[in-house]
Image 1: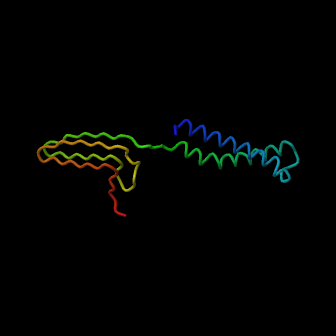
Image 2: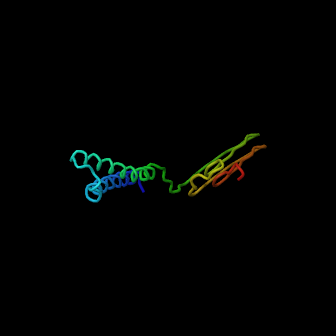
Image 3: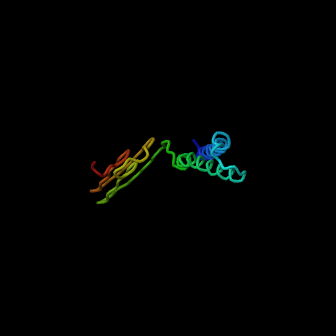
Length: 127
């Protein structure tokens, strides 16, 4: 899903939550609200803001995170003499990163060169 669509969804859900919160405060919880008109609106708006925040926070996290749908990783290396080359198609470290889609790795070496190729993630820590 495109980033703009995710953000539009998050904003729309937050606005709907604010509207539903105002409606709930004004109709369902009206017996608990103060008698003065300005005070009623202030309390209803505060309730609606809390409801919108409760909905908007997770939607905002969802809309802002990076979506990875795979892709093509192409890596080429040439190592000569005593050089060392490492090619990793995914992530490097103790936790997994995004999975690669299609990984193509090509390497040429000569002399005492060393080449390491890893198509996915390289896990360095033991659990």
